[in-house]
Length: 178
Image (cartoon, rainbow, N blue to C red; front, side, top):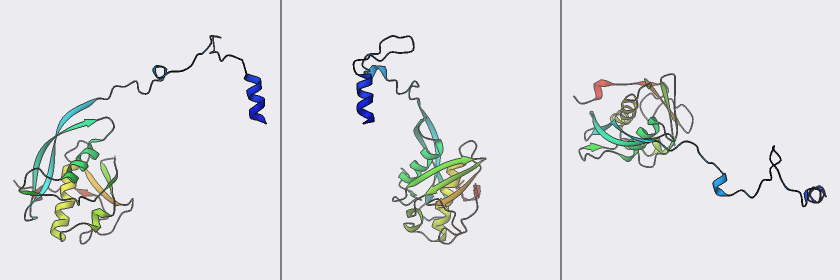
C-alpha cells in the first residue's frame, strides 16, 4: 500500500528544517496559541428597562467587563437578558431567548434572536413597545449604532406580535422617563 511504501521510504531518516538542522519532538512550549494577551476593560453602560406599568423606560447604569472576544452590542444584549437589578424595573426580554448573532453594519445593528423572543413574550402591545425600545435605546447608546433591525431565527418578520417589526427601529427618547 501507499502508506507502507511511505513508511519504508522515511524510516530511519531524520526530519530537518530548511537549514538542515534536525527537528526534535515538539512540546507544548513550542506551540504558540496566541501572541496577544487577553485585554479586558471595565466600562459603564446604560441599559433601559420597563417601569412596572409598561409605560416608560428607565435607565440603569451597569459596570461590565468587555473583552476582545465579544462586541459591546453582544454584552449589552446579554445584560438586558439578565434583567434589571432595581426591583422597581421589569425585565423586557424573555429569559428563554437566545441571542443567535449581533452585527452592526453602516449604523444598523442586526440583532438575531431565537423564536422564544416572540413565543415567550408575555405583554400586549405596550409590553412589546417596552421590549423593542429597551433594546433599541440601549444599543443606540453605543457609538456607531443608529438603528436596530430585529431578526427571528435569521428572518425579518412583518410583526412582532402586534407591532410592525420589519424595518429598522430608531431611538425613541419620548419613552425614556425624565
